Each structure stands twice: as structure tokens, then as C-alpha cells.
Image (cartoon, rainbow, N blue to C red; front, side):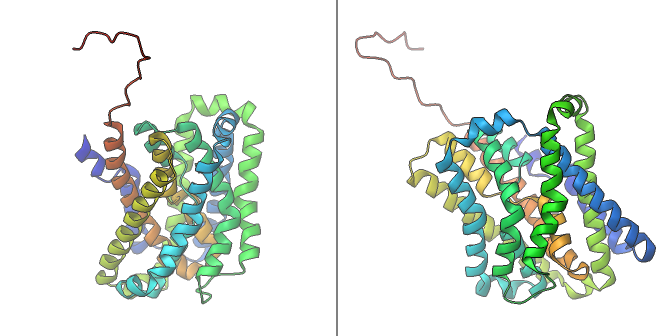
Length: 336
């Protein structure tokens, strides 16, 4: 079982196949224009459905745990960007400038929702707090990600005005999310009965955006500009970044006296970066000819975080629960 969790999942294989397809048959001309409209609509539909799926009870159940949420937000939007900036002199020589721009973009992204909650559940952590933290991170990313990317990038790197990008991201992601949540009373039952619809939209929209981004990049000579040594260096960069964040979030949770269940939530929500939010944000924030190189670090980090966190979740799940204290004067039961 542990070994199977280290293997790429089906969606990762679909992503690899999409990159190969875009490399061999990139979309251009009229097809690229149609694909632009279709991907925008698909991403908006995705966030509409995510809003409809999010339970208001789950929000209220976890919203009061403000100390935990502050730690997760700090890890997501402060610790990650600081590490990306501080490690630049050490890690940038391992990759191309475009790929390190993608790493900085990765550092500015919000946390995942589905996988973070799934791992917290697997590890027997604080699930209501995880739902609240991960969902809040997605919403905060609409405002924080463009601003943090603007601060991290000393040069334009194909990026437009962060404030203008914030408005476009809000229109494409946040407005559909809120609309879906407001319509939840009418849609929740349908989504529960038709879980496959959510999965198709979820994965299909990301694959469409990845295909469009890599099509532009391939036409502009992406693979001739990215040597194999840079791809190997990218693997090292992602591993160093993920390892430092996991160690730091674990140490911080214990230092601040959080329970083991809260520590699990902080570690898994604070170390994740969202492919679902990141790919469409890259499409908005960066010019089409550089978007492919920008999302490549995110795709690699996405698979790495899934594999590493699967192992961590299993280790947490095997922990022994604290014994129940027996009041003084009460005889203990027979030992077995």
C-alpha cells in the first residue's frame, strides 16, 4: 500500500500526456483562440462548482481556530515567498531564469483544498480546521498571489499589472466561487449524487489550461531553452523547498503548543500549493509565451508534495492515541 502511494496517480499521468501532446501537436491560430475561450469558461465553471460544494457548516466549524489559521496563512504567503527569495542565489544557478520565475510564482500560490483535507483526514487531524484554512487560502490567494508575485519578481518577466491581474483573477475565480456557494442549497444534492461531474470538470479544466499554456511555450521554443540539467535542477529546487517548509511548519506547530491534530492540519495545509488555482492564475498573470515554463515547477512540485505527504500521513495515522486519564480512587481495569 505504501509503495503504491509513491507511484504517480492517474491525473499526473494525464498531465504528462497533455504536455507530450502539446509538444507534438501544439494549438495555434484559430484553434488557439477557441481554446482560450473554452479554458476560461471551464475554469470559471470549476470554481463555481467548488463554491457550491463548500459546506457553510464546515466553515463555521473551523473558523474559530484563528491561531491555527494565522500559522497556515503565514506559511503559505510569508514563509514560502521568503524561502524562494532567500534561496535564489543558491538555487537559481541550477535552473533557467524562466524556471526560477516559476518557482517564485509557486511560492506565492494559495494552498490546495481537496488533497490537504484528504491528507488531514488520513492522518487523523483537525478536519474542520483544515476545511476552513484551505478554503480561506484559496480566497485570499485572489488578492495575495498577484501582490506577492509582483514583489518577488524584480523584473517584469512577462507579468502584467498586479492590480489589474487581481481584478481579472477575482472576476474569473472568486465571483464564480461566491455565486456557486450562494446557490449551494439548490446544487449540493446534485453534486453529491454526481461526484463524477465534479471530477471531470476539475481535471478537465486543468488539462485544457496546461495544454494551452504548453502549446504557446512550445511554439516559442520552450524545450530548446530548457536543457535536461535544468530539469534535474528543478527537481532539487522543489525538494529543498518542500523539505524546508515541512520541517518549519512542524517545528512551529510544536513550539507554539498546538495539539497533534492541529499540528497535522498546519503541516498539510501550510506545505501545499494549489495546481487548481495556480494554472489559471499563471494564465492571467503571465504572457502566453512564458506561461508554460512558469507552470512546469508547479506541476513537478504538485506530484512531489502528494508523494511525500502520503508517507507523512501514514506515519501520523499510526501514532498511538494518548491514554485516557483515570480519576484518583478509581480502580483500573484488568490489563490484557
